Image (spheres, rainbow, N blue to C red):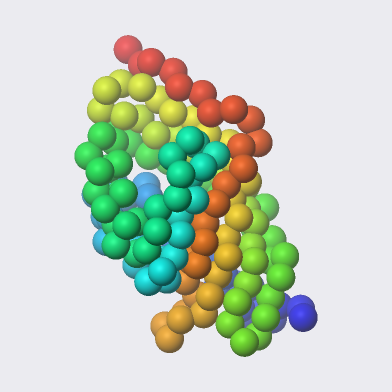
Length: 143
């Protein structure tokens, strides 16, 4: 079924909210709130496996944010590939992300994100977020 424009906007807003939440270093609760209670954050493409559950996502970001100095995520090419009016959608987007660690290393990632979404009582949530590298990640020491 074709995704109605209002739903497409809400879905794109969720994808953008993910990038903005990660860039607000320190707001692990804000990132976790974007996930369904049993949501999965699949970081296998970065060699980190899967983080399961909203609380697992929160704990992952508490730890990750502790080592981050700055982040910048740029999201584009948001496409709704499947939409079910009963409350699910599959979305892909391109992401170009930079993360400067407190250790002085700059991580640059160019990825295609895959979002499986579910509609919760207050709007769309991430049921599963994964990624495929478009180019290998690059770590560059700064300084």
